Length: 98
Image 1 (cartoon, one colour):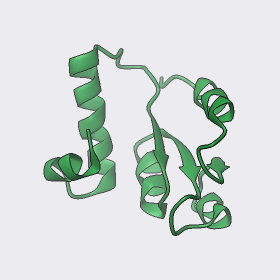
Image 2: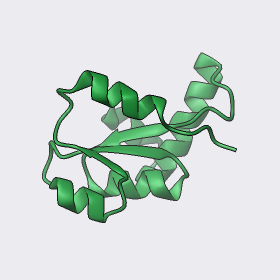
Image 3: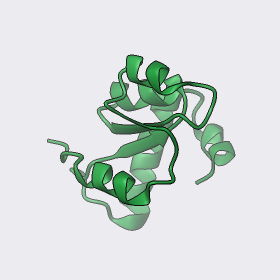
Image 4: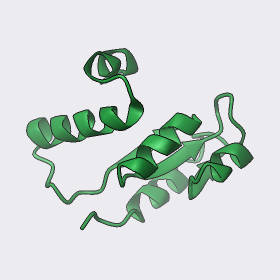
């Protein structure tokens, strides 16, 4: 789902998380307890993840610095997505939802 398509379904980022979660469960048969992790580069992405109980890997590839993303509450902040192995390690460490 691209960002433009997603915004047709909801106006606020936290609402988009619920839409995406429902679609993945429906079309990919994702178990309801499976962890959801957002990978985003804005403070709104961090807010959306934290307010929906999702994990967040923030990436300082946009207008926000690593310090800003960390201050917004992102537990994991990468400078970019060039370290694929490191990203996969972060994703594998996300706990399952209760």
